[in-house]
Amino acid sequence: MKTIVISLFLSMLSLTSLFAQDNATTKAKTILDNVSAKTKAYSTIKINYTLIHETKDNVGKGDKASGTLLLKGSKYQLTLLGNVIYCDGTTIWTHMLDEKEVIVANASQKDEVFNPAKMLTIYETGFKYKFIQERFEQNRAIYIIDLFPKEVEKSEYSRVRLYINKDKSQIWKVEYFAKDKNTYTIIVNSFETNTSMNDADFKFDKAKHPGVQIIDER
Image (cartoon, rainbow, N blue to C red):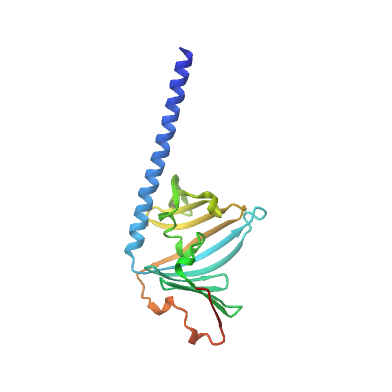
């Protein structure tokens, strides 16, 4: 009898755990679907952000850099660590300002997870997700959701954590946890929507940058 009771109790705990995990996944999906729908409703998005890089030896004292992201559908312009990256949806130009070089590639060749241009839609493919908690941080209500790569062995990251502004259904912060114990954090400082942007903003203009070497890797 004791064995049967213990077995039933363990089975109940297992079912409870599975139910909790399923609820966490369902809640995460609902939140992320809302974020996705709201983000895609904007004609354009302009973000000013801070990037923080921490190693296992300098937690809390990481290197910081500021950048700007312009988004218009599948097009984007991104400033990041001395680079300006242009993408018109088909071609990507990476302008390395100090080196005076531009690397040209097909957009399909560049599929990095860690990319501020993709942080608003990172959860849409290649990840499982789980709702972690709701809390207040810096005077805002925040949903916290963890993403886990479906193909862990092919990913440089073991986990990605999203901090979502509950009231605005906007991603406020993203933390990337690399397998080599480095952590990369992107914090959104400002989020402007439906501002005027020209398609020329998403293409590298060689005429405006004389003397730049073009390296075509397509």
